[in-house]
Image (tube, rainbow, N blue to C red; front, side, top):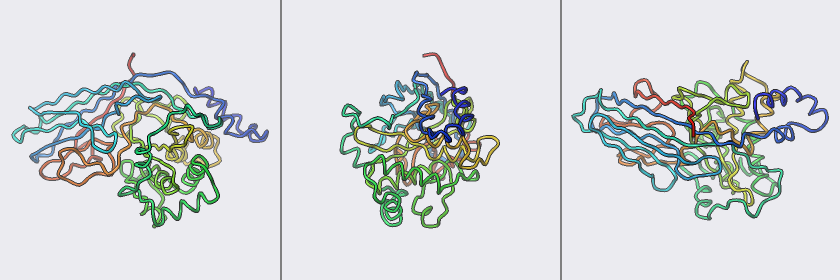
Length: 369
């Protein structure tokens, strides 16, 4: 959907609703771009912490080709006599460049540059069609993995009770996931003051009724509730790499994308494969789309709500679906997810949400294929 299509969609919203057509048909009628685009993503890191045994971990786009992301190639340069290697983390599709430096390396020389090139195209699963026996099928082991609880995504207790209430009487993964998606949008809030993308502690959020946060929090609620309902689901951690072509100023970022990390979600349904959703971005549109603090019945919010159940605009690149990630070579506990550069020295873990003092910058640009 280009900007003209989007403006047309929002301008005729009242007429569509009055005629009974509604936003769903309108959003489906405006197709996403099906062409491939090529991007370059560059992460530059300088370790200023004076501690010894300096190491950093940089997430990179996953190497497996999909129908929406492909041809990921990553290179790196390490200064200051350091070494670097690309490592696959066991258990998930997490890839990371790991770099470390000799203890006698001057602080000013402990730097790393990681460059990834990849292609993306907008992703859409047409849920108005019947199941297709030729649709991509996931293996049973993978589906079992994405039904399991994690440290911050339990599937018992209040999570199971809430999920059962939302999905009572519903059959099939799509019906259950849709009900959970709508519930998450209606019951969460995007809180601008949240550090980074949030933590995603689902039990805490449900128990305290503190349902505010950012994308890692909101997506985690969807994933945990879906798993508790028996629907395989997973977070997708990544970063925005371009402005939105759909008319949304809040749903894109280009150039300096140091603070543009974004977590999405997927669920699995037989006959369709993995289905993209993004309840967090619906809440982002409500909070940040000009002039800000839009109501739920705003045409732009309604259009995003329909569009983001079954489609992603791929001005974003996926890193991985990992949870409880043990950083290769680290002696410290696992982290909830790897979406930001991480670092540590003998003094402990470096704050990955403080790019000014950790000193890292991430930039993105389109390039010719």
